[in-house]
Image 1: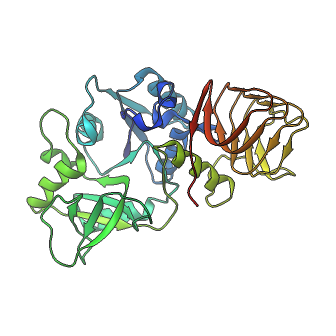
Image 2 (image 1 turned 60 degrees about the horizontal axis):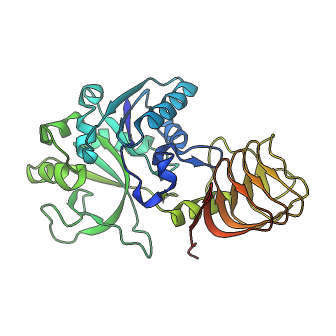
Image 3 (image 1 turned 45 degrees about the horizontal axis):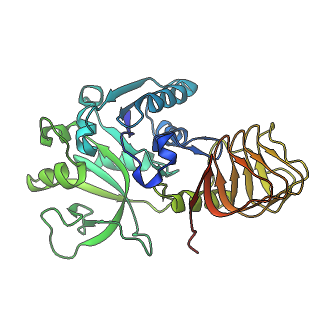
Length: 334
Protein backbone atom coordinates (compact mmCIF):
# COMPACT_ATOMS: atom_id res chain seq x y z
CA UNK A 1 0.00 0.00 0.00
CA UNK A 2 1.13 3.55 -0.77
CA UNK A 3 0.28 6.76 1.06
CA UNK A 4 0.24 10.48 0.37
CA UNK A 5 0.76 13.26 2.90
CA UNK A 6 -0.69 16.62 1.81
CA UNK A 7 2.12 19.15 2.30
CA UNK A 8 1.43 22.08 -0.03
CA UNK A 9 -0.60 24.37 2.25
CA UNK A 10 0.45 27.95 2.89
CA UNK A 11 0.01 27.86 6.67
CA UNK A 12 -1.28 31.43 6.82
CA UNK A 13 -2.85 31.04 10.28
CA UNK A 14 0.50 29.99 11.76
CA UNK A 15 2.57 32.89 10.45
CA UNK A 16 5.30 33.93 11.19
CA UNK A 17 6.35 30.37 12.07
CA UNK A 18 5.41 29.10 8.62
CA UNK A 19 7.80 31.64 7.11
CA UNK A 20 10.46 29.22 8.39
CA UNK A 21 8.69 25.84 8.25
CA UNK A 22 5.85 24.43 6.15
CA UNK A 23 3.23 23.11 8.58
CA UNK A 24 4.11 19.41 8.22
CA UNK A 25 7.75 20.29 8.93
CA UNK A 26 6.95 22.34 12.04
CA UNK A 27 8.84 21.14 15.12
CA UNK A 28 6.62 19.52 17.72
CA UNK A 29 8.08 18.20 20.97
CA UNK A 30 11.43 17.18 19.60
CA UNK A 31 10.65 16.11 16.07
CA UNK A 32 8.96 17.35 12.90
CA UNK A 33 5.20 16.88 12.80
CA UNK A 34 5.81 14.83 9.63
CA UNK A 35 7.45 12.06 11.68
CA UNK A 36 4.25 11.39 13.62
CA UNK A 37 2.36 11.01 10.32
CA UNK A 38 4.88 8.45 9.08
CA UNK A 39 4.46 6.34 12.21
CA UNK A 40 0.70 6.12 11.66
CA UNK A 41 1.04 5.31 7.97
CA UNK A 42 3.77 2.70 8.44
CA UNK A 43 1.70 0.96 11.09
CA UNK A 44 -1.22 0.86 8.63
CA UNK A 45 0.90 -0.90 6.04
CA UNK A 46 2.22 1.95 3.87
CA UNK A 47 5.47 0.98 2.17
CA UNK A 48 6.05 4.11 0.07
CA UNK A 49 5.05 7.74 0.60
CA UNK A 50 4.32 10.63 -1.73
CA UNK A 51 4.04 14.31 -0.93
CA UNK A 52 3.07 17.45 -2.81
CA UNK A 53 4.98 20.69 -2.20
CA UNK A 54 4.32 24.36 -2.88
CA UNK A 55 5.17 26.61 0.08
CA UNK A 56 8.90 26.45 1.04
CA UNK A 57 9.30 23.37 -1.18
CA UNK A 58 13.00 22.82 -0.47
CA UNK A 59 12.44 22.80 3.30
CA UNK A 60 9.47 20.46 2.97
CA UNK A 61 11.25 18.04 0.66
CA UNK A 62 14.41 17.98 2.80
CA UNK A 63 12.35 17.23 5.92
CA UNK A 64 10.38 14.49 4.20
CA UNK A 65 13.50 12.88 2.72
CA UNK A 66 15.25 12.88 6.07
CA UNK A 67 12.25 11.38 7.86
CA UNK A 68 11.52 8.76 5.20
CA UNK A 69 15.22 7.90 5.15
CA UNK A 70 15.16 7.29 8.91
CA UNK A 71 12.60 4.50 8.49
CA UNK A 72 13.56 3.22 5.05
CA UNK A 73 10.48 4.37 3.13
CA UNK A 74 10.80 5.47 -0.52
CA UNK A 75 9.62 9.04 -1.13
CA UNK A 76 7.96 10.48 -4.24
CA UNK A 77 7.68 14.28 -4.54
CA UNK A 78 5.37 16.29 -6.80
CA UNK A 79 5.94 20.06 -6.79
CA UNK A 80 3.05 22.44 -7.51
CA UNK A 81 4.20 25.81 -8.88
CA UNK A 82 0.54 26.85 -8.59
CA UNK A 83 -1.23 25.35 -5.59
CA UNK A 84 -3.77 22.77 -6.74
CA UNK A 85 -5.98 22.15 -3.71
CA UNK A 86 -6.49 18.74 -2.14
CA UNK A 87 -8.05 17.17 -5.24
CA UNK A 88 -5.47 18.58 -7.59
CA UNK A 89 -2.69 17.62 -5.21
CA UNK A 90 -3.80 13.97 -5.19
CA UNK A 91 -4.22 14.06 -8.98
CA UNK A 92 -0.58 15.19 -9.27
CA UNK A 93 0.55 11.87 -7.77
CA UNK A 94 -1.75 9.74 -9.94
CA UNK A 95 1.04 7.74 -11.56
CA UNK A 96 2.55 7.02 -8.14
CA UNK A 97 -0.71 6.13 -6.37
CA UNK A 98 -2.67 4.24 -9.05
CA UNK A 99 -2.88 0.47 -8.97
CA UNK A 100 -4.32 -0.24 -5.54
CA UNK A 101 -6.02 1.37 -2.56
CA UNK A 102 -3.99 4.16 -1.00
CA UNK A 103 -4.07 6.40 2.06
CA UNK A 104 -4.20 10.21 2.10
CA UNK A 105 -3.25 12.09 5.27
CA UNK A 106 -3.46 15.84 5.98
CA UNK A 107 -0.03 17.16 6.91
CA UNK A 108 -1.10 19.60 9.63
CA UNK A 109 -2.88 17.35 12.14
CA UNK A 110 -1.83 15.19 15.07
CA UNK A 111 -3.80 11.96 14.81
CA UNK A 112 -2.18 8.86 16.36
CA UNK A 113 -4.87 6.50 15.08
CA UNK A 114 -4.72 2.81 14.17
CA UNK A 115 -5.78 2.84 10.52
CA UNK A 116 -5.61 -0.92 9.97
CA UNK A 117 -9.31 -1.51 10.82
CA UNK A 118 -10.24 1.38 8.54
CA UNK A 119 -8.32 -0.09 5.61
CA UNK A 120 -9.86 -3.53 6.21
CA UNK A 121 -13.37 -2.08 6.37
CA UNK A 122 -12.77 -0.04 3.23
CA UNK A 123 -11.67 -3.10 1.28
CA UNK A 124 -14.58 -5.19 2.55
CA UNK A 125 -17.14 -2.51 1.68
CA UNK A 126 -16.20 -2.06 -1.96
CA UNK A 127 -16.36 1.72 -1.51
CA UNK A 128 -14.58 4.01 -3.93
CA UNK A 129 -13.37 6.07 -0.98
CA UNK A 130 -13.64 6.07 2.80
CA UNK A 131 -13.45 9.21 4.92
CA UNK A 132 -12.18 8.79 8.49
CA UNK A 133 -14.56 10.64 10.81
CA UNK A 134 -14.93 11.65 14.45
CA UNK A 135 -17.82 12.92 16.54
CA UNK A 136 -18.13 16.65 15.97
CA UNK A 137 -15.85 18.46 18.46
CA UNK A 138 -17.66 20.66 20.95
CA UNK A 139 -17.48 24.44 20.47
CA UNK A 140 -15.95 24.12 16.98
CA UNK A 141 -17.37 25.20 13.62
CA UNK A 142 -16.04 22.55 11.28
CA UNK A 143 -18.10 21.77 8.19
CA UNK A 144 -20.00 18.50 8.63
CA UNK A 145 -19.79 15.25 6.72
CA UNK A 146 -23.30 13.79 6.75
CA UNK A 147 -23.92 10.02 6.74
CA UNK A 148 -27.01 7.95 6.16
CA UNK A 149 -27.89 4.90 8.26
CA UNK A 150 -25.66 2.67 6.10
CA UNK A 151 -22.65 4.91 6.76
CA UNK A 152 -22.64 6.27 3.23
CA UNK A 153 -21.57 9.89 2.80
CA UNK A 154 -24.46 11.90 1.35
CA UNK A 155 -23.37 15.49 1.89
CA UNK A 156 -20.08 17.29 2.61
CA UNK A 157 -20.09 20.90 3.83
CA UNK A 158 -23.58 21.26 2.37
CA UNK A 159 -22.63 19.76 -1.02
CA UNK A 160 -23.98 16.48 -2.36
CA UNK A 161 -27.21 14.61 -3.04
CA UNK A 162 -28.36 14.69 0.61
CA UNK A 163 -31.22 12.62 1.95
CA UNK A 164 -33.37 12.03 5.01
CA UNK A 165 -32.19 11.18 8.52
CA UNK A 166 -28.56 12.14 8.01
CA UNK A 167 -26.13 12.43 10.93
CA UNK A 168 -23.28 15.02 11.07
CA UNK A 169 -19.66 14.01 11.69
CA UNK A 170 -16.27 15.67 11.69
CA UNK A 171 -13.76 14.85 8.95
CA UNK A 172 -10.26 14.12 10.28
CA UNK A 173 -8.33 14.83 7.08
CA UNK A 174 -7.59 11.14 6.45
CA UNK A 175 -8.96 9.04 3.59
CA UNK A 176 -8.63 5.58 2.10
CA UNK A 177 -9.14 5.73 -1.68
CA UNK A 178 -9.36 3.40 -4.63
CA UNK A 179 -7.94 4.48 -7.99
CA UNK A 180 -11.53 5.03 -9.19
CA UNK A 181 -11.36 8.53 -7.67
CA UNK A 182 -9.05 9.65 -10.50
CA UNK A 183 -11.85 9.11 -13.04
CA UNK A 184 -13.82 11.93 -11.39
CA UNK A 185 -11.06 14.52 -11.22
CA UNK A 186 -10.75 17.43 -13.61
CA UNK A 187 -7.86 17.03 -16.06
CA UNK A 188 -6.18 20.15 -14.69
CA UNK A 189 -6.60 23.08 -12.34
CA UNK A 190 -7.21 23.41 -8.60
CA UNK A 191 -10.08 21.49 -6.99
CA UNK A 192 -11.13 20.15 -3.63
CA UNK A 193 -11.34 16.40 -3.06
CA UNK A 194 -14.31 16.70 -0.68
CA UNK A 195 -16.46 19.43 -2.16
CA UNK A 196 -15.77 18.71 -5.84
CA UNK A 197 -14.48 15.20 -6.56
CA UNK A 198 -16.47 13.29 -3.96
CA UNK A 199 -19.65 15.15 -4.85
CA UNK A 200 -19.28 14.06 -8.48
CA UNK A 201 -18.73 10.49 -7.33
CA UNK A 202 -21.80 10.49 -5.10
CA UNK A 203 -23.96 11.98 -7.84
CA UNK A 204 -22.76 9.24 -10.20
CA UNK A 205 -23.71 6.56 -7.68
CA UNK A 206 -20.24 5.54 -6.53
CA UNK A 207 -20.13 4.74 -2.81
CA UNK A 208 -18.18 7.09 -0.58
CA UNK A 209 -18.34 5.79 2.97
CA UNK A 210 -17.61 7.18 6.41
CA UNK A 211 -15.70 5.26 9.08
CA UNK A 212 -16.08 6.68 12.58
CA UNK A 213 -13.21 6.37 15.06
CA UNK A 214 -13.03 7.62 18.62
CA UNK A 215 -9.51 8.66 19.46
CA UNK A 216 -7.40 11.77 19.93
CA UNK A 217 -7.25 14.25 17.03
CA UNK A 218 -5.94 17.79 16.83
CA UNK A 219 -5.63 20.42 14.13
CA UNK A 220 -2.42 22.37 14.72
CA UNK A 221 -3.37 25.12 12.30
CA UNK A 222 -3.35 28.06 14.75
CA UNK A 223 -1.04 29.07 17.64
CA UNK A 224 -3.77 28.30 20.18
CA UNK A 225 -4.41 24.85 18.75
CA UNK A 226 -0.69 24.13 18.54
CA UNK A 227 -0.25 25.05 22.19
CA UNK A 228 -3.38 23.12 23.22
CA UNK A 229 -1.90 20.04 21.57
CA UNK A 230 1.38 20.53 23.45
CA UNK A 231 -0.66 20.65 26.65
CA UNK A 232 -2.58 17.50 25.75
CA UNK A 233 0.57 15.49 25.04
CA UNK A 234 2.52 16.70 28.07
CA UNK A 235 -0.41 16.11 30.41
CA UNK A 236 -0.71 12.51 29.22
CA UNK A 237 -3.98 12.85 27.36
CA UNK A 238 -2.32 11.26 24.33
CA UNK A 239 0.76 9.05 24.01
CA UNK A 240 3.15 9.53 21.11
CA UNK A 241 5.84 7.23 19.78
CA UNK A 242 9.40 8.46 20.24
CA UNK A 243 8.84 10.63 23.30
CA UNK A 244 11.46 10.08 26.01
CA UNK A 245 10.19 8.85 29.38
CA UNK A 246 9.67 11.22 32.26
CA UNK A 247 12.64 11.68 34.53
CA UNK A 248 12.49 12.20 38.26
CA UNK A 249 10.60 15.45 37.80
CA UNK A 250 7.37 16.23 36.01
CA UNK A 251 9.09 16.77 32.68
CA UNK A 252 10.79 15.11 29.73
CA UNK A 253 14.14 16.27 28.42
CA UNK A 254 16.79 15.61 25.83
CA UNK A 255 20.06 14.41 27.40
CA UNK A 256 21.84 17.57 26.23
CA UNK A 257 19.32 19.98 27.79
CA UNK A 258 20.66 22.02 30.71
CA UNK A 259 18.15 23.00 33.38
CA UNK A 260 20.64 24.56 35.79
CA UNK A 261 18.92 25.88 38.88
CA UNK A 262 15.53 26.29 37.22
CA UNK A 263 12.40 25.46 39.19
CA UNK A 264 10.28 23.15 37.06
CA UNK A 265 6.72 22.38 38.06
CA UNK A 266 5.72 20.97 34.67
CA UNK A 267 4.63 19.07 32.82
CA UNK A 268 7.26 20.35 30.42
CA UNK A 269 9.54 19.35 27.56
CA UNK A 270 13.18 20.49 27.09
CA UNK A 271 14.81 19.88 23.73
CA UNK A 272 18.43 19.35 22.69
CA UNK A 273 20.93 21.99 23.74
CA UNK A 274 18.49 24.31 25.48
CA UNK A 275 19.96 26.19 28.44
CA UNK A 276 18.08 27.62 31.42
CA UNK A 277 19.88 30.01 33.73
CA UNK A 278 19.47 30.32 37.49
CA UNK A 279 16.12 31.35 38.86
CA UNK A 280 14.04 30.40 35.82
CA UNK A 281 10.50 29.29 36.72
CA UNK A 282 8.78 26.77 34.48
CA UNK A 283 5.10 26.04 35.02
CA UNK A 284 2.64 23.75 33.25
CA UNK A 285 2.40 22.96 29.53
CA UNK A 286 5.78 24.36 28.51
CA UNK A 287 7.80 23.21 25.48
CA UNK A 288 11.35 24.56 25.13
CA UNK A 289 12.92 23.91 21.72
CA UNK A 290 16.48 23.11 20.67
CA UNK A 291 19.16 25.71 21.29
CA UNK A 292 16.84 27.97 23.29
CA UNK A 293 18.44 30.09 26.03
CA UNK A 294 16.29 31.30 28.90
CA UNK A 295 17.70 34.17 30.94
CA UNK A 296 17.90 34.42 34.70
CA UNK A 297 14.59 34.90 36.50
CA UNK A 298 12.41 34.39 33.41
CA UNK A 299 9.02 32.74 33.83
CA UNK A 300 7.49 30.28 31.35
CA UNK A 301 3.88 29.17 31.70
CA UNK A 302 1.70 27.50 29.07
CA UNK A 303 3.98 28.39 26.18
CA UNK A 304 6.07 26.99 23.37
CA UNK A 305 9.51 28.43 22.63
CA UNK A 306 10.85 27.38 19.22
CA UNK A 307 14.41 26.70 18.20
CA UNK A 308 17.23 29.14 18.79
CA UNK A 309 15.14 31.74 20.65
CA UNK A 310 16.72 33.79 23.44
CA UNK A 311 14.47 34.75 26.34
CA UNK A 312 15.90 37.81 28.14
CA UNK A 313 16.34 37.77 31.92
CA UNK A 314 13.06 38.41 33.72
CA UNK A 315 10.78 38.01 30.72
CA UNK A 316 7.43 36.34 31.37
CA UNK A 317 5.86 34.17 28.67
CA UNK A 318 2.30 33.07 29.37
CA UNK A 319 0.06 31.50 26.71
CA UNK A 320 2.28 32.50 23.82
CA UNK A 321 4.37 30.92 21.11
CA UNK A 322 7.83 32.45 20.86
CA UNK A 323 10.33 32.29 18.03
CA UNK A 324 13.20 34.75 17.69
CA UNK A 325 11.79 38.20 18.42
CA UNK A 326 8.19 37.07 17.81
CA UNK A 327 5.74 36.61 20.67
CA UNK A 328 2.41 35.35 19.32
CA UNK A 329 -0.56 35.12 21.72
CA UNK A 330 -1.95 31.59 21.99
CA UNK A 331 -4.80 31.66 24.51
CA UNK A 332 -5.82 28.20 25.67
CA UNK A 333 -9.41 27.11 26.06
CA UNK A 334 -10.42 25.20 29.18
